[in-house]
Image (cartoon, rainbow, N blue to C red; front, side, top):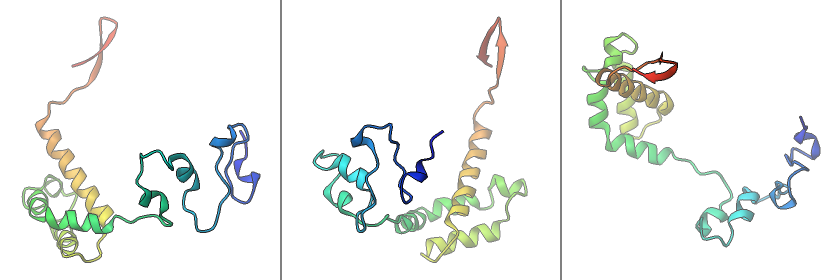
Length: 143
């Protein structure tokens, strides 16, 4: 196994790769130079994406989605919540986090998204027939 870190100051470059595929040296003020080199002039990415100098954040979009869909999420995570029925979550902290997020206040969005994903999964599990795999006549089949 090659030690790519030792090839320069934090630069990860595989000498076995063709020159064009190697990661360019870091240049202050340039963000993702390999992406820029690969897609400049291709028409695949708009120029504003190639010209950016920082990583973008998606918090505003996440809060907007939480605000827009708060009524559906309240229903999903409210009294009919499968997670609450199993004692896995309590409605007050989850409801409070949802209300704060819908109001645009700082919230643990990752935790809220995990609760929503688990709730949706549990509901789908109840509505979808359970399948398992077993061997039938020397073949593996879904039953």
